Image (tube, rainbow, N blue to C red):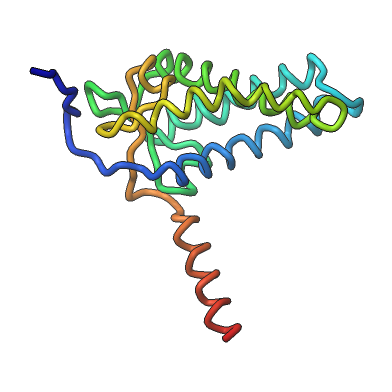
Length: 180
């Protein structure tokens, strides 16, 4: 006899590609800002790290708390974050726990991008984020990553958003048709 975890309500699952693209949009925004405001020297400085952390907290904690669980990247791809138990937007403490973990992984990616030319072994800094996000591959019901499990949150599809992935697909299809 096995005990299976049953989600509290049925929500549409989000594909891994959309989740990755939403994270990529948020990361790109924060990384560009931290790179511009952090300094002009090679490598990563303390100011750059602090700007990255503050930017991440604003974009991934404060904005979703005030915007129905959607950051800019999640809004662009019609995704939102909810608590598993109540199916509501998480409170600030839950969002801070969740995004604190993923901020560490994103910060390591930022450090990797800044140092990859001088030190190719910096690519190993991608491993923590890969492990964290790779956990969603084994979860067939809620597709929770490790940071989602720790904060007891889930990522679901939303009707509210920009549908950037669908619009890009339409543009690509239109260009392909015109090329023929």
